Amino acid sequence: MYLKIHETPKGKIVAACDQELLGKVLDNGRIYLDLKTHRSFYSGSLAGDKELREALGNFVSANLVGKRAVAVAIEMDIADKRDVMYINKTPHIQLYRI
Image (cartoon, rainbow, N blue to C red; front, top):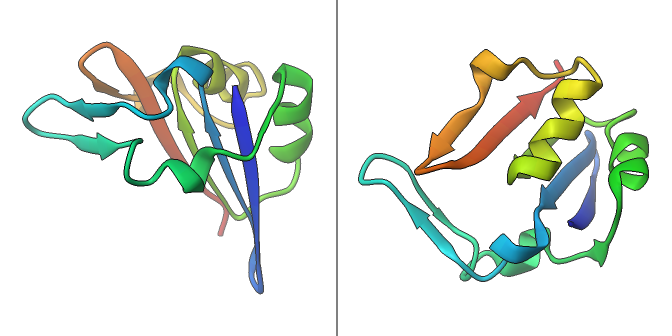
């Protein structure tokens, strides 16, 4: 998956996207997510589950797209399956720590 960490004055924003989704547009008529136009938000380096877990250890916001990326957050108990949005069959979740 692709992982990019955006450093901000308020903390880290973690963006992760399953590799095969980058460059696609997800649209179910209700939710629209353009991973083509906003490619640079996600296209950091290729990473595995371990790197994403480390990044999710300290963040203020996280934006995760795809089965693999979302599964890591659920396995870490920082997200719940009930909170996952689906764009067609693609899971997507936004997390915030306040």
